[in-house]
Image 1 (cartoon, rainbow, N blue to C red):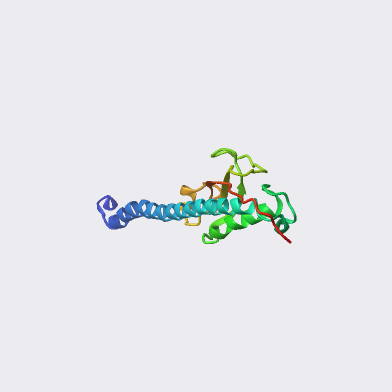
Image 2: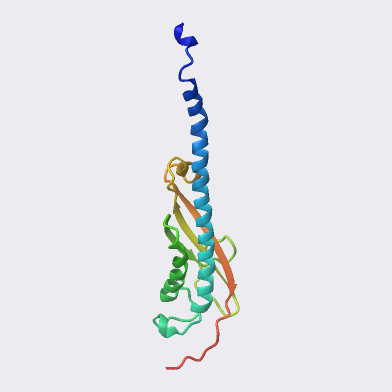
Length: 166
């Protein structure tokens, strides 16, 4: 009976009831802001890769093991992938990425050849690791703490018709 009238610790219980949800909410905001920043970086990487692609695809074959111009394979693909990798180095939470050349917006196919004046579309898919305690499970995948991000950009292939000399 004496404990029913005892109000010691009531402020502490009220603090816990109010603090914990608020704390998780602010952690989630921090995690979500990191995720949005990473999404911007992935989109920028796609734009950078598209700009690189319209240059690299019709560049001199001697720089790419004499591979045919217009192909998205071999050393040409490596050069485009490197262009996409550079902006993503700014976000340590991006743990992996890949590029492909879809035919239409949002597609997952991978074109292997582009001709002159054709639209070159590059899609960058990156894996982002959420790292804020508690919030990583709410904002990203509950089990893994990972989230897949996509960026896509397209530019017209204006590859120049150069006569390359020796």
